[in-house]
Image (cartoon, rainbow, N blue to C red):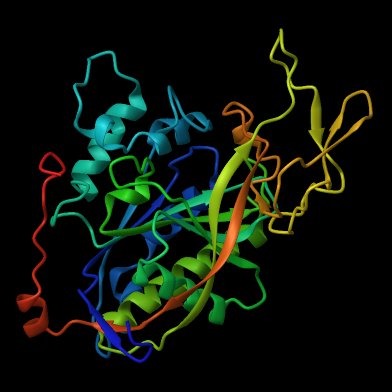
Length: 337
């Protein structure tokens, strides 16, 4: 691809903003409730100058929100794989598996031409990660341009783009239902708590995202550039007792809250409950994130490690109606793949 080439992409006609996929991550819950109150004319106040998008606000896991829990039966944000969405479903299936099919019907079906154009799923983390966009692609130019726009508009907040290298069939989170999608993850914030500064950052992020979508739909050309992408390499579990499987150490004080600070072989990683320092035994420096995330204790994850690379993002603009007719995508069913 030539650096100066402008990539033409379909209009983003339908956007979904989802909160409460985890019922105790409250910034997204309260933000979606607030946005629902906003009059449609105010949401689309620039409609005369810019093409508006239809914006759907969704509270993803209402039972978990009502109970103030991450989930009721199982993690909803692991229920959007091809197998779960399309396999047999028993009457005794966990609530979240049933709910994932409802959301797939509302926003998808996943992988189909009927799916919404963009899903933004709102999350909080207890880790000190700032604002992150988490996506399954490092070459989704829509998501990467939205990230660049947020970087320009929110320069006072640390922003990172995290890439989980997972296939479409195996992608498991709600944002994978849309043609484009990402999780907007903001922290640090304790679960079942809402902090004003974290809520405000999320609100600004969503507002800037929707502004970008309207501007893109209006025909503006967005110049290309580079984005640093953090691709997840592996997870590290806590040290555990071989018999009880209880953890025997905590994140080392020198590592705690240092998300995205390069971790070198030999650096302190854990401090055992008897006071011993355990060091990082990897063969190369990597970037830690989701350090000591509260919700990941049950998943056996103390932290995740990523490799950073620089991705060249091309200039883009919306397709004209004539271009869109000429480039109508042919969707292949996942059974045919």
